[in-house]
Image 1 (cartoon, rainbow, N blue to C red):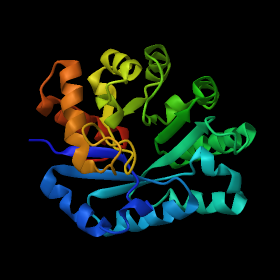
Image 2: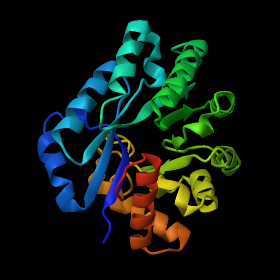
Image 3: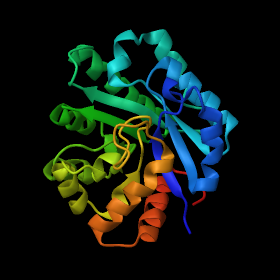
Image 4: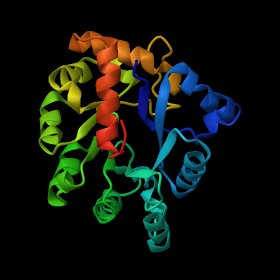
Length: 259
């Protein structure tokens, strides 16, 4: 039986300060075979490096979240360039655009999104894209920068089926997590029903977005079986097929040698 691959987690978050080690050590015995911890700020990237060096089954993505780009400068970017070349760094991310908040200014977000897309290309790494209320600009910049050459994943996909076609045409994967289990997630369910299973990967975005029946609680990889069940029902396939296919997809996404 295949394990579950959590392609997007934030175990460096303070929400795990009380029991991080205990929780992470429990993952393999509970069927979680691999995790990619995702950087969002310089500090979280450093913590991510620590986690991926301490645990065999944890890998890392290094990047600056759009909401954190206001404090990024050339010195910080130079550090990112070095960090992205570490052995267990498997992606540049999470990067992108977030227009839900008014700050940082959109032009600042765009500047560092472009720079990090170029960095991914230089390093030969895929990208983890964060896009919130910014579908059109995200897609436009990705086209301009030929993001299909690096490939990657649209994290926590939340747009329409029509927008999914755009990202699918670029060859991107789609990160699907706890929101799929929410009763009011009609738009997402329509998009997921359209997407080929071969382009879907599982993610938690923990400690956020815990699936039903744990909605509102701290999320963790241990809750991913609820997402597996929801995805299997939506696709009309077995849960084992979902685990196997999404594992293989994640290995391809992050260009890992072994399945």
